[in-house]
Length: 330
Image 1 (cartoon, rainbow, N blue to C red):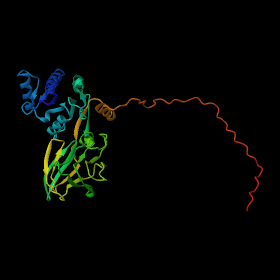
Image 2: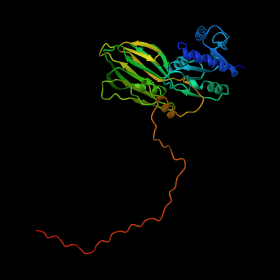
Image 3: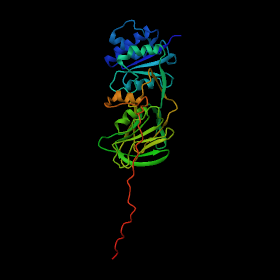
Image 4: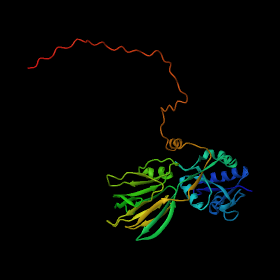
């Protein structure tokens, strides 16, 4: 049975187009069948000219159910787009970073040939990344239902006017304040928008949800890390007529009137990411953010026992037993 690999690419960039063509040829040479979306395949043909490219077309030659793995060539935005496309499937995604930081990507452009060899040998593992379920309510009616891998962000709709919001955890209000917005994120999203807003970095294997205010005008408006089983909510208060806008992973949005309510819970369907080598998350942080580590000595791998000599004996000073004269009392 043929092993089909779906190749995603940011076909609006020349570098991505060249990487996609190289990936397809490497996959074919490794005995795999590269597959591309019709629109992206057409962009390839437009750029390189019509030739016998070694690719099948999704929806014509095969379906999503025939795909073993998705290789995503681009930055985190391209991976998020690919995650949308395979949302209802069990297809894992392996990112090859062509962007700047590329936290979701597993390998770099220079490692493309090695990556294909690892795929051919099935030398990869699949990890689950938590996603969130988002519902928007207005006047008791649910007007929107979607999901996100990184975060859902409530932002003010007008630059000149703050949003008035109240944050809620497990159906209990916490605090209200004026702000530019609120980010509700997964551990995966802790290094994205939530990080830029001052939130904590959370290791991907930690199961938690985050709430991070954006430029809040309040004394108590700190980032919160809560249980993955909690129900988060933010309400846009009606004290002003300020409107908001809701963004999911920076890709899907909806405008929110005063009085709108956003509810966030853990989704039952995770996103699957393929890893070709188990790099500790701390090492990824150092690499992606180019953090300084000069002076680090590391753990001692073997105990060093210093030779010991005789135990020194401390001689106590001798005190006189002669009683002191009593003071004269007046």
